[in-house]
Image (cartoon, rainbow, N blue to C red; front, top):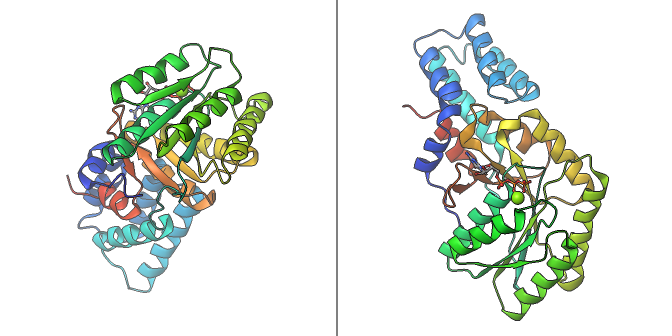
Length: 307
Ligand SMILES: Nc1nc2c(ncn2[C@@H]2O[C@H](COP(=O)(O)OP(=O)(O)OP(=O)(O)O)[C@@H](O)[C@H]2O)c(=O)[nH]1
Ligand SMILES: [Mg+2]
């Protein structure tokens, strides 16, 4: 589906902190320098500080060192071009959201407490509406007090209906009702917001599996997309969460929220490389329009953009 077009301007703004800490600073520091040992060590420090991760950093720096020794790279500027090309290659291609020939398309959104699930649901709903799709929201977080109301407020603001149950109700039952409503109203997309859970809480993780089963029972092939929301400011802990969640449900994509709130946007690299799950969307602020599809080329450009 053709929603959510990347705009480099928004990415640049949203990635300001990472750009300052990594790309922009690196470019400034490297300009006019020779690619000697000291320079290589500096590059290594920048990459590690931006959360690019030890594996990738080591690979990048040894490749740079080899090329420098062979005389293929000499100047700091060459290193920037090299890093841009390599990072882009490691991040892979754009991976769009799933589609279905038989609506409703069902998107299940999961993640630990406070990572940005509900806000991300609102952002996706907003983008879909902008794209002319009809959307229904399911408030399946019946666990936290106030969670249903929070989604209902988003629904009002965006002009999107919300199917809700009482606080403490069985989330699987709410999801069942929401699916029935989505089918009856012939909506294009059903978005399911779920309760925040720690990846260590067995009961809640099981509940997520139950929600998934309910969806699959009523609509073959659903949920078509299981988006795990990760908080970019949580660094390596986000990686652990992703691994645990993928043991409970098959995650089809990552929504990386709060990229605007961190100087460590390099976390994108280990997420994309080591999890085997594509980053599909990124959150760049608290407003409904602060969402972009993850476009590796635009991302790398934004990070290394000149001021
Ligand atoms: N800066 C920034 N803040 C965000 C982003 N996404 C969400 N937030 C903020 O993060 C906080 C938590 O967001 P929620 O959407 O309520 O998170 P949640 O995962 O639904 O939380 P629980 O339902 O309690 O588990 C809110 O203050 C949001 O405004 C983002 O991309 N950037
Ligand atoms: Mg929530």
